[in-house]
Image (cartoon, rainbow, N blue to C red; front, side, top):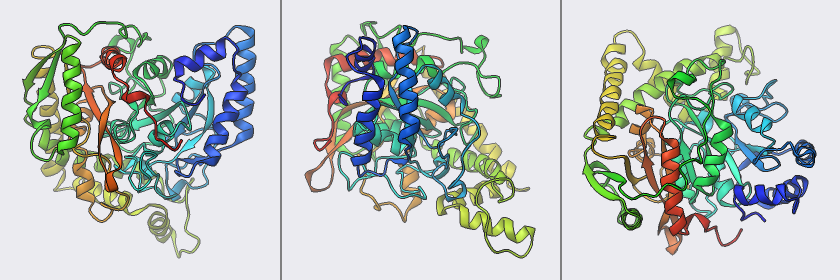
Length: 491
């Protein structure tokens, strides 16, 4: 049952071959038996109550296509009744009095929450080793990282602990873990998905998105996940392209005549041979489907790393200032005065990577450094967006390449080298800085330690509001390949 896609589960539920309660019970048992540390909070009673309500809706005939299907939420989305920790000791026992818009939208669709998923603390990381509650393990190879920051989401879907999960992508945190765990994930155009109730890291970059087995599953999830939200000042209005739409509308569109841009910067020095081989093989399949390959250049790709690691920490420094031990969150037990309480609470509550980024962000926002660093980084950000603008539409229809330079690395391999972690995002950061949609699609395997197989992801980048097109392209590829159907052998 757990190997079924969302589409298949929907058919089973609507035809009453299985009930939502049976489905939820099945997945809860799998979660309980797992040893990946993917889930941070599970409440069986809450889940089964939602499943019973979904069964009632299905019996009444008023249920939509996602009703009764289980989903798990990255612990960056606040949820009423479940803990909302952002993977941090700072919010270790926090329970939100309200649901994030994304959570409430899926609840309205009748989906059943399985629990909250582990993530890098405040979504800061590329390996899911920065969580205050321990690292998540990659289900393909438990010696490997699952990617981050949505590592718990990717691991849960790959291990079939949940048929779908929510994630967030600030600089690649949906696409990279999806690639490392061999599942499909998409980061929509910035503003498509409401950030209300998403615990903020970098507000001008954070964007929620779905993670599932297939492109078709992600399209079904986006149908209910997107839409204007007046509570989010960055949410796109209908006039800006965020009208309610059917993201499945291009799934059957043939690829004949599709122009695929291949940035030379994505296939140069630093790209592992096994990753390139898998990506090139995927590109060959697209050619067979009628697409043509076009060489392009995104000349400022290398600048995305310094630009991102100035802009994102600056915004994090501002956003995380609210966690001071006064209103909510961790408070030190012993302190001498208010200032001492602030310092001790934040020192105890935040982990090393979060502290590092706060320090960097505070530095670049200081008087005398703001113009030299932050303003310059924002100028580079605009230039990076211009590079994409020059390519998409006039030269190519979409851009493809690897998601990451290598397959997933071993747990602990880069723990003492944060810059090495940052460099792993070289192919995803520029898309986030430009606010473009991008997705990861399973396309093969590379070599891990002791001859283990570790998944490789193909990145597909499109123009603004081009999610349906990307999903259609990915779906056509998944009709002629089976990488997305493969699961770890011990699940």
